Length: 346
Ligand code: 5AD
Image 1: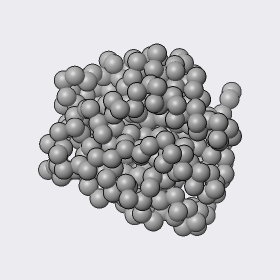
Image 2: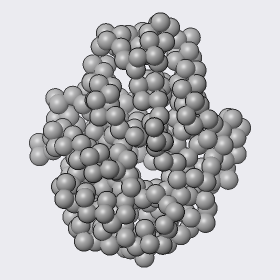
Image 3: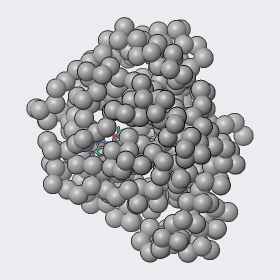
């Protein structure tokens, strides 16, 4: 297995069977070696610096009906909310004072936020916080829409592909959504000049090792600047309520493999990983991550942005818990920095 890991680091590639063996047959000692190589590769570009992103969950209205997601349109239990421009700017201001230099505006696919409204919000943030990166995570839109948001001042865009296997995609999503359009969006975003994030859940219902190998292949092909990877966690008001959660171990394995595939990628230790395991953030760093995304949303809305059961938004998942996060990261040998944390140039 060690030979596979060394070759993965050197060539950023393995055969399908070798990737599967790494996922299915690696012993604890192999994993430790993989994690050590992932840390070394990360350290070469970033050292032990950890970038923070202030996550502003500004709407939980969604026109989509993804089977895994707690804010899917057909969940009548979700208490819907939207933040207005003034509230969003107030979140950014609070975040700036705490040391955040990236704001991530994430929301369901909410038709209220037309291109006019989104461009207006992005321009206002851009004018007030010229030294900050603006990341959008608002789903599938037209190329023209993405171009407009980029022109308004957005720099980055997160759009997880969720799974690169078309049949698996169809199992997770309603028929009106397709992997093809998701990939069209990702390619448009990259071509426009956004630092682009793809990604997937680990352990979503029906996912096989073969699906994950396809995810790795997609990442090799797309070369995104960011990759969001977290465990699937069931939500009680979704069709997947009785499905088992993904495992932390397998999530960490995927993170470390992706670090070797994309050495300079920005890789968050996700909230889902922090929800599944108390020490998820630290274990993420140990597997090659270099980003955390604490919650900057107003306190009363956090509990409503429930993508899965028990989603954490307290303690060091919260922006006000930054001191605690810094301390935890320092104890693990990492330094949380005040920095935009852009993808490095050549
Ligand atoms: N478990 C884990 N992650 C989820 N997401 C949505 N629902 C769940 C869930 N039940 C993830 C998706 C989405 C991101 C914003 O949250 O991957 O892209």
